[in-house]
Image 1 (cartoon, helix red, strand yellow):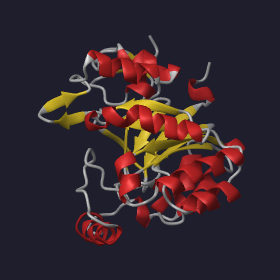
Image 2 (cartoon, rainbow, N blue to C red):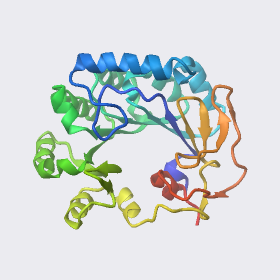
Image 3 (spheres, rainbow, N blue to C red):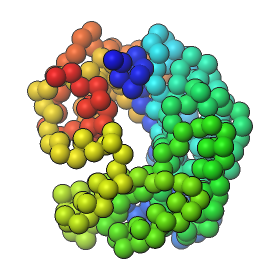
Length: 295
């Protein structure tokens, strides 16, 4: 059986820019939409403009380099926030001519409506909508977020809506779940990785918190909970049937293995001829690894 029902998996980090400033993300939290835009411009000027990124490629070249793989691909488009990537809808049109896409997004922009109108839903594996509830409320975008989900669903897109289980949000989770349910949106949980109140998560979750997470976790994710992050020495097809393209154009086997295997700008990717052993001590991409794993 083919992984993900596709021949090949490509994850592309288009860029790190985002219109949100989540406290559990790498970017500092802003106090207003205007401050976010100002901070983003400063951040872009300092970090992005000085180095070549995928923004410097034409969308035609991005799509063409994917097609050079000559496989039926599932292309994961991630950010930052993909829907603010320049000409994002046009890029999706080009990629879906021969391949399928999946998008991880905060689903908060109006570009979503144009995407829903112009992209064939049969070419979209799914839209993974992350619920950053505090940010949605702070910027008055919760109604738009819900409306965007409903519109995508009406157009025939599969939307998976994931609630980030940040420790401070457990007290309101059930209320939020009922709110989304009232709009015919069933949400699933996503565990938080990071440090909160001097505790490291997900290890610091209490038993009751784990039970809440498991209760609303999708079946394809439940099998990851009992896995040790250490896959070193196990056979894994990443690098052979799956790659990661970072915004700087470097191609990697996965998020955890930091040895480049290609340059996306040059369209040069040195895929492994066969399945290799995992060579990292800690795996940060277990979903792909487990689904593509060869025991």
